[in-house]
Length: 189
Ligand SMILES: [Zn+2]
Image 1 (cartoon, rainbow, N blue to C red):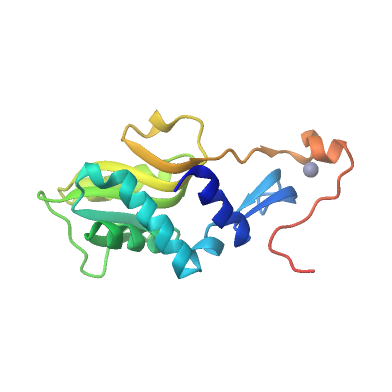
Image 2 (image 1 turned 45 degrees about the vertical axis):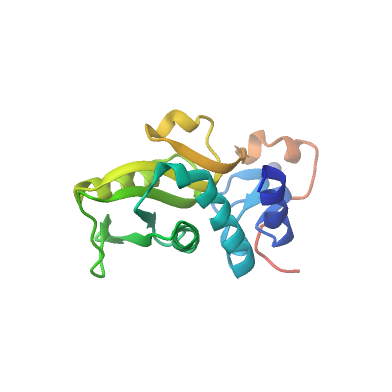
């Protein structure tokens, strides 16, 4: 699946909007990304998971590990595509950890899978969970990489799409300067 095909699924499902938006942070952007909206359709989630699987098969992972909640659906689909376990890490008292009896060990080659990677902070945190369990982290993957430099993680990173989502303070927003009306994404009507 090429970049355009991926973005087409996002647009079709309302997971990628283009316009002039006020984000929950208060910042303005010309794009709004909400990957849960594309992943709610099993056929789209399956196709994206398959594409990530094809991109990462050469890494010979033995398990997928995703951070909850955003990474769970795509992690499951990548695990299905590669025929390997899909685990997730979740927060307990603020710390990302393996719960529910999930285990990883020295024989595991772990692929970190997320829907969207922005700063890479959660990716690194999830990798640290696998390493603390004694496993080897062999790479990371996401549907979308919002960051400027795929090398920033210190891990091989495979993403289906590189997409910038620029943000501005309202005072410096170029669309506000042109007087374009701003909308809040997710609100109806
Ligand atoms: Zn604006």
